[in-house]
Length: 356
Image (cartoon, rainbow, N blue to C red; front, side):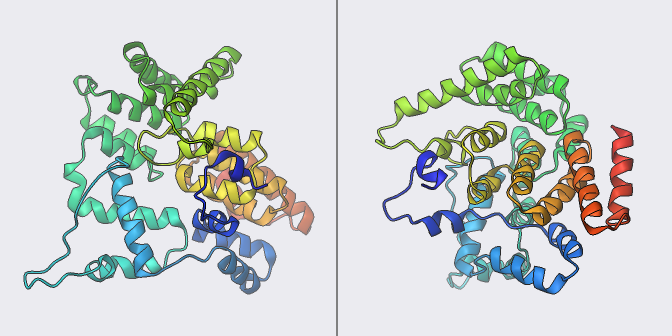
């Protein structure tokens, strides 16, 4: 039985192929190029990648991702809006027609996360000034730019801006993504002291606590997440509970990249299962590291290498990612009898490690 048959609730019309294809996460151009270099046969590998990670580049799918990106841009899953794509003569256009330049660029991008990033930049042109401070922080957090969140806080936010709990949670998340546990914990414990029953406070507190080395912290983290799950089960009228559905972007979802990875590991999730959750949590270096480890342990060494390397490039402060990337490059060097394999990347990794 597929893992998501047990942990994800499906509609009666869903099939195994529907589940596997709808949530597939594609490698970025960086990942593809490094994997090509490792094979010595770039053409055949690229064809295999394209076959495995093709995506629907139709106008209909562009519309779906455009609307989804706007809800994520505002961090509001149930956001209602009307783009009203009608000109002065009354002619109504479809999104891919009205935004044809963006659509053309979108069609060229294989990675869903990079397509989403393109759409976020598109919304910046019209909607950035409409965002509240907490939404700006989350816009950067969820677009893999926690450093921009940090800079925005430094440049624009003072202590008197902290009356909104959503901003406090978002900043705690920023510092978690930056591997800075002390300020992350300070922010979230302030929120927890004032609103201990707030679901989003509980979720982020659980994320941060589980990354602690203290066993008591991990126990509390599990209690907080279990409480959230129990509340959702109690409030649901469904006869079949899809546990990890609660962790996908939707109204009142549990925003926990840490426990999503934990449940996938605990239940021995398949690679297709990891790909589905990767659509939610590739902004998190911990989730990405665990995904790459899963690939390596499943015999997908080339994809693991590519994902480890892109992880280290995007999150050079994440020590576990650096160590794993160095380790897998060394393994490739031995297997290929090539001590200079990815020498430029290794030099960069050594530099990053010297800074940590």
